[in-house]
Length: 252
Image (cartoon, rainbow, N blue to C red):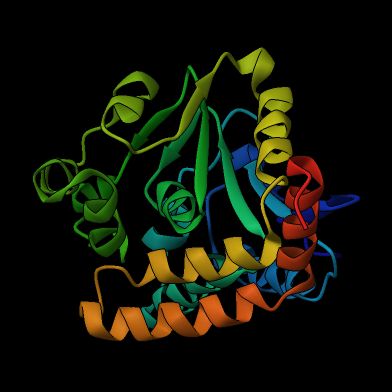
């Protein structure tokens, strides 16, 4: 893509969506928003992807909304609507999505990470949703954050706007792995390599079920699950897995 605030890098089955406004810690304005949608469109059109890494250039992952644009009155309800549409697109991507965070992952930066399937953080990362300090609501971070860390902890983070460390984030389940900054690139690749052992189809169906786990009653969830399971059991991936199992066990 030719956007000024994002670029895309692809290496075989892994794509990276890279925020490229390091001079403002990858803060989000209208250009950023439009470029993110363009980047997501390109990734959605890519075949054979197993994983998408979202990361930021420079000293931070992202500090969220661009306060200069906000102060100049450039951020409207339409911007917030476009933001939530982008977060939903991230959640719905077929490949597994991994937020690779360093520096600050605050406000919208943390919201991007919450929309991803998995979160990898460097030891120096600081996270939080400080929107109330600008007299704003932290988007649907109010919806997603409680699902990761529980209502009580989420309420505290959202109402105080306080930042937490990588160590605390790991302890409460907000991130999945914490690594030294000099190791985070390789360790993220190692995580993705392990994930690639699973079925792409089964992983996608599973994450769709997880995404709606708190929204549907158990009967509805079961019917959707059975539909997905029927599709999964008829895939070439499942058939190959069972053939390998039979060979390994010497059966059939």
